[in-house]
Length: 290
Image (cartoon, rainbow, N blue to C red):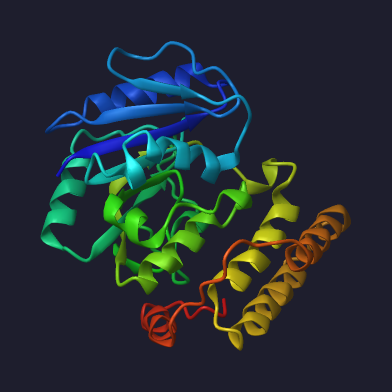
């Protein structure tokens, strides 16, 4: 089971990036080949053997990761699985890669593994980092219906069959788009509480474009992947949830602007999931209406 790793960076956290690279290179088992993508910025110094790709412009999170995937051949075919890690994260345990290899070998239909993200100082896991509705116990591993973009491992056959990350999303919901397509192709996704990535506690709203892109991409996600009858149900539920959370007036204005943009701009190819996939998502605890 050959592993590679893709890390994208804006070049603004060189110390964090170096610590992450050291933790990846220190993993037990066969060495991991690492590619660092400078997303519109220079990468800076990296350890010997680490490959770098510097892009002239910021392609967003999915676009940058897709460039990293292709650095391992078409759909990453030069390796069996790829780790995707945030550049300010850290693998605190040396056996993470080996546990990924064992999991993929033991379950041929396992396509994606999502890690548990913990704050390096407190050890706490934010509720939003447990990718299921019943998120109260982050120490419980389970089958899930999506994954965490900066703390995961993906079998490259999934990328070959389901396609790459949706580059036009730029930021937000690109993982769920790939997850739904992977599940529709027959793959499964596991949340593993014993596979840990340390990452500072943050709020997603720190990004200026957060509210607009979350809303726009939610509409795109539905338009691209859901059977037609479920699209208004899914988006109606998320509209109500947004109003219940009572965002600030500027945030709500940005959200509605993104929601409108999602309906009026191209979302990419539409490939609605099979109804049996809808049932699979429901049995896994998250029907695609929420």
